[in-house]
Image 1: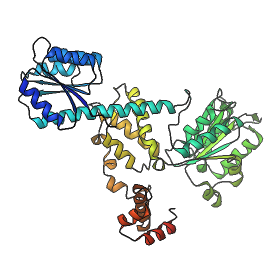
Image 2: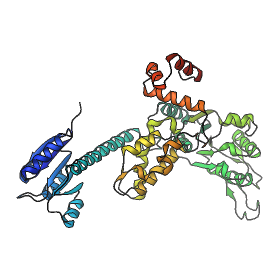
Image 3: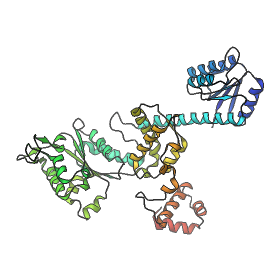
Image 4: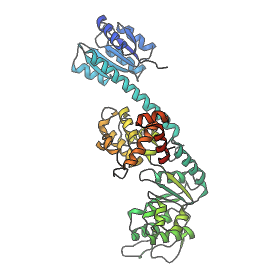
Length: 453
């Protein structure tokens, strides 16, 4: 059952009090009135209200005292000051003490109605964000690496990751850029018996073959010009722990052969060295490419693929787990507010709606960047639509493109629209057919043709 917002009006002018009560009751609010400051103060001591409208100048107990009592007893109550004695000083003082807004007499009823609606919207946003925080807290994992999700597919994936973490088998993680592949690798590491050991990471796509060889295997003193001291490589440094090889499919074929030998023999030789170094490393590799296609084309060694792909974990794109967007957004709000040392803003309903409709070609990483930008730009405690990048706001353009920026075919658009209509009609095919302007048999044929059952 819906409980209407509770509003207290405190004003010692009978006409003003009656008018405000009449206007706000018509909005469906539950109204309590007090024609003196002491009565208003007593209501505040005994009841809780969503919004308090109070006159500033009253005998015995004035609006400032009402405001102070509200702040002390009910910090979530929003207070709107109303006065015929408008001065800049009193406005500043009221706002400094925590008043939501300041309205001067004579006021327009529409203006008061608007201020009350905005105050209630602020309360609703705060409550929604608090609910997100509480849900987020339940999902966070005992102080270790956190993958924020309530998506059924990702939760199943994490269960598999927990099960294989203690086994020490090699793992191949696949998924689009920005989905959190390194975070998942750290999740596996921290749930394994190697969690006390190092977790080293290297992006294979950022080095040419010579530099990657030196980075992974290290070198002996005098191995090449400038090698004044011996240096262990990342594989050696990861001994006793885990090595994460990101974008593994970008590694050259020659380098792949060297890595395969290390994985098979559990030893390596530094550049310029003559003795093998024994290692104890778990290998976790990742790629944003289709590995099967890379193997078929000869770009990736089949034997190395089988060595790494003992267990495969695939992270789905953010566009396929829309339910995680509010939780992830709240997580990034908290994270970047701390990093920027700024008061934590709330996310407006419009922003959350836009984010839930967006396709996120950059996945979770893109969402984090959007939230970080919003925190930097928001100055009034709310991340609003105007704080989003232009290409996010112009959804009509971005959502009609594929993730690579190219335009989709008419068939792709038809599939997408039929799926949307079926979702919004709750799978009711008769209603969906009516919405699409086709008969039920035609819809059934399209569903069968496109495999939408």
